Amino acid sequence: MEMITDFYFFLLSAILISLSGVMSPGPLFAVTIAKASREKNAGILISLGHGVVEFPLMFLIYFGFAWVFTSDFTQKAIGLVGGALMIYLGFRMLKTQRETEEKSSYFKYGSIASGILATVGNPYFLLWWATIGAFLVMNAALFGLIGFSIFAVIHWSCDLVWNIFVSLMVFKSRRFWTKRVHEIVFGFCFIILTGFGAWFIISVLI
Image (cartoon, rainbow, N blue to C red; front, side):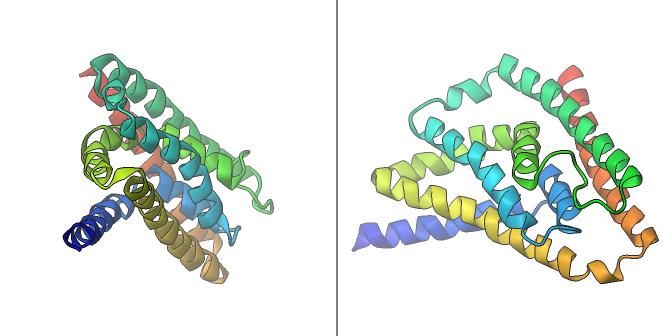
Protein backbone atom coordinates (compact mmCIF):
# COMPACT_ATOMS: atom_id res chain seq x y z
CA MET A 1 0.00 0.00 0.00
CA GLU A 2 2.83 2.39 0.89
CA MET A 3 4.55 1.72 -2.42
CA ILE A 4 1.34 2.47 -4.32
CA THR A 5 0.97 5.74 -2.42
CA ASP A 6 4.58 6.62 -3.22
CA PHE A 7 3.96 5.87 -6.87
CA TYR A 8 0.90 8.11 -7.01
CA PHE A 9 2.85 10.89 -5.30
CA PHE A 10 5.67 10.44 -7.82
CA LEU A 11 3.25 10.61 -10.76
CA LEU A 12 1.67 13.79 -9.38
CA SER A 13 5.08 15.44 -9.01
CA ALA A 14 6.09 14.21 -12.48
CA ILE A 15 2.95 15.74 -14.00
CA LEU A 16 3.59 19.11 -12.36
CA ILE A 17 7.24 19.13 -13.44
CA SER A 18 6.31 18.01 -16.95
CA LEU A 19 3.66 20.70 -17.32
CA SER A 20 6.11 23.39 -16.23
CA GLY A 21 8.25 22.47 -19.22
CA VAL A 22 5.43 21.71 -21.66
CA MET A 23 3.65 25.03 -21.11
CA SER A 24 6.77 27.15 -21.57
CA PRO A 25 6.81 28.97 -24.95
CA GLY A 26 9.31 27.35 -27.29
CA PRO A 27 9.79 25.91 -30.78
CA LEU A 28 7.10 23.22 -30.43
CA PHE A 29 4.62 25.83 -29.16
CA ALA A 30 5.35 28.09 -32.13
CA VAL A 31 4.96 25.24 -34.62
CA THR A 32 1.66 24.22 -33.00
CA ILE A 33 0.24 27.74 -33.36
CA ALA A 34 1.38 27.98 -36.97
CA LYS A 35 -0.10 24.64 -38.04
CA ALA A 36 -3.28 24.97 -35.95
CA SER A 37 -4.36 28.13 -37.77
CA ARG A 38 -5.48 25.88 -40.65
CA GLU A 39 -5.49 22.35 -39.24
CA LYS A 40 -7.89 21.32 -36.46
CA ASN A 41 -5.97 18.19 -35.47
CA ALA A 42 -2.55 19.84 -35.55
CA GLY A 43 -2.04 19.40 -31.80
CA ILE A 44 -2.58 15.65 -31.96
CA LEU A 45 -0.37 15.17 -35.01
CA ILE A 46 2.44 17.37 -33.68
CA SER A 47 2.32 15.48 -30.38
CA LEU A 48 2.64 12.20 -32.28
CA GLY A 49 5.71 13.58 -34.05
CA HIS A 50 7.06 14.73 -30.70
CA GLY A 51 6.45 11.25 -29.29
CA VAL A 52 8.39 9.63 -32.13
CA VAL A 53 11.48 11.31 -30.67
CA GLU A 54 10.56 11.41 -26.99
CA PHE A 55 9.60 7.79 -26.32
CA PRO A 56 12.84 6.26 -27.67
CA LEU A 57 14.80 8.91 -25.78
CA MET A 58 13.07 8.08 -22.51
CA PHE A 59 13.82 4.39 -22.97
CA LEU A 60 17.46 5.12 -23.83
CA ILE A 61 17.78 7.03 -20.56
CA TYR A 62 16.00 4.23 -18.69
CA PHE A 63 18.52 1.71 -20.02
CA GLY A 64 21.47 3.88 -19.02
CA PHE A 65 22.39 6.12 -21.94
CA ALA A 66 21.84 9.51 -20.29
CA TRP A 67 25.62 10.11 -20.29
CA VAL A 68 25.56 10.43 -24.09
CA PHE A 69 23.53 13.65 -23.88
CA THR A 70 25.61 15.21 -21.13
CA SER A 71 28.97 15.04 -22.94
CA ASP A 72 30.43 18.41 -23.95
CA PHE A 73 30.85 17.42 -27.60
CA THR A 74 27.27 16.18 -27.90
CA GLN A 75 25.86 19.33 -26.33
CA LYS A 76 27.83 21.60 -28.67
CA ALA A 77 26.88 19.57 -31.75
CA ILE A 78 23.22 19.58 -30.72
CA GLY A 79 23.33 23.33 -30.05
CA LEU A 80 24.80 24.20 -33.45
CA VAL A 81 22.72 21.81 -35.55
CA GLY A 82 19.53 22.38 -33.55
CA GLY A 83 19.96 26.16 -33.61
CA ALA A 84 20.46 26.16 -37.37
CA LEU A 85 17.36 23.99 -37.82
CA MET A 86 15.24 26.31 -35.67
CA ILE A 87 16.32 29.33 -37.73
CA TYR A 88 15.58 27.43 -40.93
CA LEU A 89 12.09 26.48 -39.72
CA GLY A 90 11.40 30.10 -38.75
CA PHE A 91 12.36 31.50 -42.15
CA ARG A 92 10.64 28.65 -43.96
CA MET A 93 7.40 29.32 -42.09
CA LEU A 94 7.53 33.05 -42.79
CA LYS A 95 8.37 32.53 -46.46
CA THR A 96 5.65 29.95 -47.00
CA GLN A 97 3.06 32.06 -45.18
CA ARG A 98 3.76 35.06 -47.39
CA GLU A 99 3.73 33.06 -50.62
CA THR A 100 0.70 30.81 -50.04
CA GLU A 101 -2.10 32.51 -48.13
CA GLU A 102 -4.68 30.08 -49.54
CA LYS A 103 -2.82 26.82 -48.97
CA SER A 104 -3.55 24.55 -46.03
CA SER A 105 0.08 24.10 -44.92
CA TYR A 106 2.53 26.70 -43.69
CA PHE A 107 5.51 24.38 -43.85
CA LYS A 108 6.41 22.09 -46.67
CA TYR A 109 6.25 19.41 -43.97
CA GLY A 110 3.13 17.86 -42.46
CA SER A 111 2.24 18.32 -38.79
CA ILE A 112 3.81 15.03 -37.68
CA ALA A 113 7.07 15.82 -39.47
CA SER A 114 6.99 19.38 -38.08
CA GLY A 115 6.60 17.94 -34.58
CA ILE A 116 9.62 15.70 -35.15
CA LEU A 117 11.76 18.52 -36.55
CA ALA A 118 10.81 21.01 -33.82
CA THR A 119 11.68 18.39 -31.20
CA VAL A 120 14.96 17.17 -32.71
CA GLY A 121 16.04 20.74 -33.45
CA ASN A 122 15.54 21.89 -29.86
CA PRO A 123 18.83 21.31 -27.96
CA TYR A 124 17.25 22.19 -24.62
CA PHE A 125 14.75 19.37 -25.08
CA LEU A 126 17.66 16.92 -24.98
CA LEU A 127 19.40 18.77 -22.17
CA TRP A 128 16.16 18.76 -20.14
CA TRP A 129 15.98 14.99 -20.53
CA ALA A 130 19.66 14.60 -19.66
CA THR A 131 19.10 16.44 -16.36
CA ILE A 132 15.57 16.89 -14.98
CA GLY A 133 14.16 14.17 -17.20
CA ALA A 134 16.87 11.70 -16.24
CA PHE A 135 16.08 12.35 -12.57
CA LEU A 136 12.40 11.57 -13.19
CA VAL A 137 13.29 8.43 -15.15
CA MET A 138 15.54 7.20 -12.34
CA ASN A 139 12.72 7.68 -9.84
CA ALA A 140 10.25 5.97 -12.17
CA ALA A 141 12.67 3.04 -12.50
CA LEU A 142 12.24 2.36 -8.76
CA PHE A 143 8.75 1.12 -9.62
CA GLY A 144 9.97 -1.26 -12.33
CA LEU A 145 9.44 -1.30 -16.08
CA ILE A 146 5.66 -1.03 -15.71
CA GLY A 147 5.99 2.01 -13.45
CA PHE A 148 8.41 3.62 -15.87
CA SER A 149 6.14 2.88 -18.84
CA ILE A 150 3.18 4.50 -17.04
CA PHE A 151 5.34 7.54 -16.33
CA ALA A 152 6.45 7.74 -19.99
CA VAL A 153 2.85 7.69 -21.25
CA ILE A 154 1.68 10.23 -18.66
CA HIS A 155 4.57 12.58 -19.43
CA TRP A 156 3.82 12.46 -23.16
CA SER A 157 0.11 12.92 -22.39
CA CYS A 158 0.97 16.27 -20.79
CA ASP A 159 2.39 17.36 -24.15
CA LEU A 160 -0.64 15.93 -25.94
CA VAL A 161 -3.24 17.67 -23.76
CA TRP A 162 -1.47 21.03 -23.89
CA ASN A 163 -0.91 20.89 -27.67
CA ILE A 164 -4.53 19.91 -28.27
CA PHE A 165 -5.70 22.79 -26.08
CA VAL A 166 -3.48 25.31 -27.90
CA SER A 167 -4.38 24.04 -31.36
CA LEU A 168 -8.14 24.01 -30.66
CA MET A 169 -8.04 27.55 -29.26
CA VAL A 170 -6.16 28.76 -32.32
CA PHE A 171 -8.35 26.84 -34.78
CA LYS A 172 -11.64 27.93 -33.22
CA SER A 173 -10.59 31.59 -33.17
CA ARG A 174 -9.36 31.61 -36.78
CA ARG A 175 -12.46 33.47 -37.99
CA PHE A 176 -11.23 36.49 -36.03
CA TRP A 177 -7.87 36.37 -37.74
CA THR A 178 -7.64 39.34 -40.05
CA LYS A 179 -4.67 39.56 -42.36
CA ARG A 180 -2.98 41.85 -39.85
CA VAL A 181 -3.58 39.50 -36.91
CA HIS A 182 -2.37 36.66 -39.09
CA GLU A 183 0.88 38.49 -39.80
CA ILE A 184 1.40 39.37 -36.13
CA VAL A 185 0.90 35.77 -34.95
CA PHE A 186 3.23 34.36 -37.57
CA GLY A 187 5.72 37.10 -36.84
CA PHE A 188 5.61 36.04 -33.19
CA CYS A 189 6.22 32.42 -34.16
CA PHE A 190 9.07 33.50 -36.42
CA ILE A 191 10.68 35.42 -33.56
CA ILE A 192 10.36 32.44 -31.19
CA LEU A 193 11.92 29.99 -33.65
CA THR A 194 14.76 32.20 -34.88
CA GLY A 195 15.33 33.66 -31.41
CA PHE A 196 15.72 30.24 -29.84
CA GLY A 197 17.87 29.13 -32.76
CA ALA A 198 20.23 32.10 -32.38
CA TRP A 199 20.34 31.61 -28.62
CA PHE A 200 21.28 27.93 -29.01
CA ILE A 201 24.12 28.76 -31.42
CA ILE A 202 25.46 31.71 -29.40
CA SER A 203 25.40 29.73 -26.15
CA VAL A 204 27.61 27.10 -27.79
CA LEU A 205 30.10 29.57 -29.27
CA ILE A 206 30.68 31.78 -26.24
